[in-house]
Image (cartoon, rainbow, N blue to C red):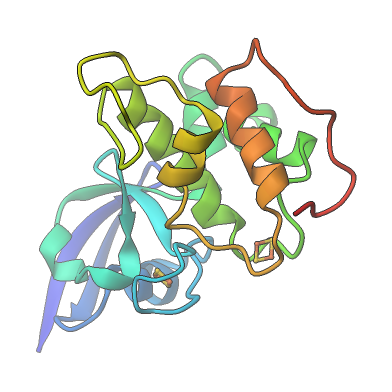
Length: 195
Ligand code: FES
Ligand code: FES
C-alpha cells in the first residue's frame, strides 16, 4: 500500500508517494534524491544515515517515512546552505557552496578518510552540540544539575553512535572539540586519519 507524504528536505518541499513500509532513509535517497544520508548497516548500528529530523538527530534507517509526514529534514547536504541563508542572499554561489562550521572543522582537522560516515558524523555532531547546549545529560555526565561541559569524554560518548570504519576518530574528536570549545584547541591539525 502506498502513501503520499510531504517532506521539507534541506529547505525544499517534496511530495512523494512511498510504500508504507519504506524507511525514511530509502525515501530520502530513492524518492527525494538526496543521497548524503548513507546506508551503512541499515540496522541502527552505525550512524551513517543520521539526519536532523525536526531539529533532533535521528537514524533514518530505523524510522518509517510515513511516520513523518510534514517533517523538516536537514541532511549534511543542506546544513551549510541553510546556515548561510540566515544572513546572506539565498541562491547565491556563496550560499549554495557554504559549509556549516562543523563541516569546516572536519576539513580543517582531517576528520575523515573515505568520507562514507562523514555526512552522518556531521549531522550527529550538530545535533549533539544542540542537545548539550540545552542541558541534556549523557551517560558520562557526572553533575546533572550543572551546565553540560563538553569534555573529550562527553564528546566521545555523545558521538559513540557514529562509527567510522576508517578510524578517523582522532580527527573527528578534534573537529567537534574545535566547535564545542573553540578557545581550547589542544592538538595540532592532523595530517592523516589518526587513531
Ligand atoms: Fe542507519 Fe547504520 S544505516 S544506523
Ligand atoms: Fe571512512 Fe569514516 S571516513 S568510514
